[in-house]
Length: 307
Image (tube, rainbow, N blue to C red):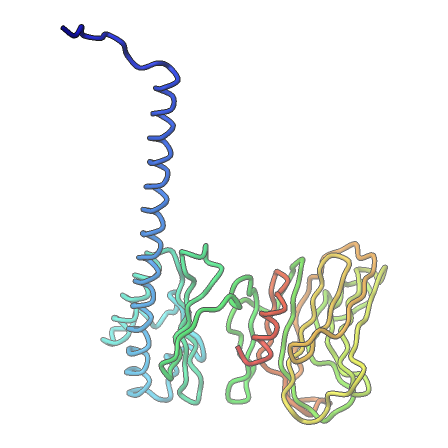
């Protein structure tokens, strides 16, 4: 005849059981959180599809309006309070994107093209999902860390993101240009213009060569890198200048050109000036972007390809 055992769990057995339960609980929480962020991503992408159709409907009916915020509208745009049915729907969709933890930006151009984009929660907002007026969509990292963005639309310089006042370390500046002129500033900024008592950052043409110049405050340190060949052939070229600590680097059309260093003691800060079809410059500068981070080589190549 068997005797009933009164033997219970040992302390080690209890600890092992608790550890297993804890691990399983963490795994369940990670799965739930991952599922939630993926659901937010899916909802945002669906919202952007609706945005594309709503913007097309509005611009078809109001081709000259550019949504009254040429060429950009966002969730904070005043005309979202307009009683127009399409704008009311735009507001509702934009509010839903906001509820998922992201902000909506819509860029409309005078030629009727447009694009909408917002960051994706599942990537900790390091990637953005973009929908264009031609129906194409893609994911990109090139809106992460973007603190100022300027484009040419209908021969006008338009501020899309941020302002002309910039301060960042590290700093990446990119832009596109085309000209047959051999000597000119293209993109520059500094405190009090480019006075000698200010930090300065300038991309320019020097006898046809593209030059990237950085100067410390009060002129205590400066450095320059430039191309070995001319880029004044009248074709579009993409230039990228990077300052990261004491190092500066120059890229042209997606290719690394050169780098150098200096003992900088102050971060770059100042007011932007972009040369455009005026004054002593004959040519065009477009798609000027400022980042508060160092772009990767792959991102620079994407910029050069028109991304």
